[in-house]
Amino acid sequence: MKPTALSVPLQFEESRHVPDVESVRRSTDRWRWLLAFTVLVMTALVWGVWAETTTHESRQALSSAARRQGNLSVAVGHYLTRALGNADAVAQYLSEVHSTPGSNFPAQLRERARVNTLLSEALACGEDGSSSSSRGAGEASAFARWCPQWLQEAPARARTFPARLVKSGDLTLVPLLTRAAGTAERPAGVIALLVDVRDLLGLMQDYSIPDETVVLVAGPDGQPRARWHNVDRMKEQRAPEVAVLPQVLAAGTLGQPVTVEGRHILASARRVQAFPLTVFVGTSVPDTLAGPRARSFYYAVACTVATLVIATFAWLLLRLQNQASRTTESLGRARQRLQVLNNALEGKVRARTGELEAALRDLEAFSYSVAHDVRAPIAAIQGFATALEPAVGATGDAKASHYLRRIVANATQMSELTESLLALGKLSRAPVATTRVDVSTMAHEVLAGLREQAPDRPVETRIQDGLTVRGDRVLLRQVLENLLGNAWKFSAARSPAVITVTGREEDGWKTIVIGDNGEGFDSSGATEVFKPFRRMHAAGAFPGTGIGLAMVERILRLHGGRAWIQSSPEKGTSVFIALPVDEGGGVEGDGSAG
Image: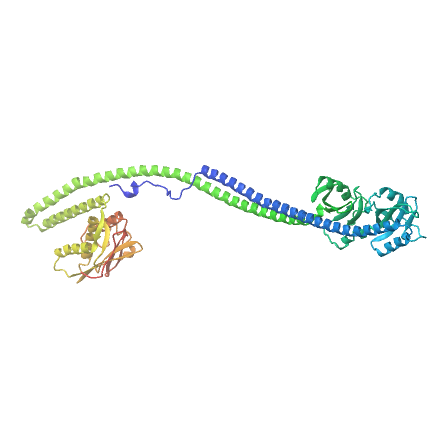
């Protein structure tokens, strides 16, 4: 049988597969693209949420401003309807007094102007160029110069008509015009009630609006009749909001942002019932969106931080993946190099195995040569020497007889040594048939055979019952015969001799211990006791060839086991044989002696 260690080719462990370099690179590229796509998607989601949030808040701010404008225009319209209704009642009363003969019209003019706090002044303009003011007969009105224009603008209808604004010093007034019929005493003309713009829109004094907002009351010609602005930046007579009023009314873009002269305005308009007036409310879009835009900036900062965190995390992952990729590539290249070395090593092992097999065949041939060529002359020498013993004994030559006996003894020893060497050589090729072996029973059998050779010798044996191992029954019997034979031999001088066989199992090994109380020796320096021809006693002290322990070591090696000795001079020897644990086998015993 070929040696097991040389018949198995070397192979790498494949349970943990190491991919090749190209597959690692392809996997790395796919992972990088996946990581880049993930980063882009997450960044797009972050900024998409920012855009959606910003747009939603801007829409909410514009919608809230539009609702506020609608409510404001309704409130201003109701206020104007009530104020102009009171002024129209005063104008209608004065018109009746003016057209009634014999009435004291100047007194009534002054009285109405005095009791009505909304009126700054009341003025009657005749078609003949005459005028009468609520200030009194002796005082001239500063607004009398507007009478020709008011006579042309006043409509023929009886309802009060708001004319274009007029100024006197710091005052800006709204003329409310009403036609009046004449009498024999007074010519027909126009009654003008002058109302301060601030009083006409007095409702706005109680409003607090955070955004820049303008409120205009425009006539049918699009010109302002009253105006309120919460910021003093628009001082001109015709502000941009006034210019956009016709566009708003024509296009119907109420509550929608428009651009006038580079300014973004959220515009809305509402007509006043019963009067030819339109309330226009304009709000600055930048002011309205100031809050959402400020929050949008902070949202953008947060999104930028989130983007940086995502990018940093992706960079760290990419760096770790690159390191892992480089490590894997290095392992792949190392595996390839190891595979090349493995292939080369397998070639060398095959070559060396061939050489060893050839050497074993030569050794086997030499063994057969020893068996046939050496044993035959030794047997002949032994036979001739034995045949000469009677003749030499008859001569009475004691020295010759002694020499002849030495020749026979040495020939016999040479024959035994040759047989032992052949047996040792056969062990290298011996097959191992593993079965369950009862060591206790086998030890009893071997010791029984030794007792038959010396029945009168006092020997005490202690064999632990139930000792079992797994191994080759024939080879393990050879081990017990050699070791028990040595114990029997080296304890011959003891009375009584004690031979023990015990066992134990620990750390995955089954250990059998064969002990005796024989001669013993110093085992501290006996490192080569299991080599052939190594003796620890003098050659003539005890019989034997010096091959027994070498055979024991060779048999245990075939079983994957080992052996060692503990001994002291005059205290006996213990030989330990250890076999690996195998399922179905074990070292068991009840501790009884035999």
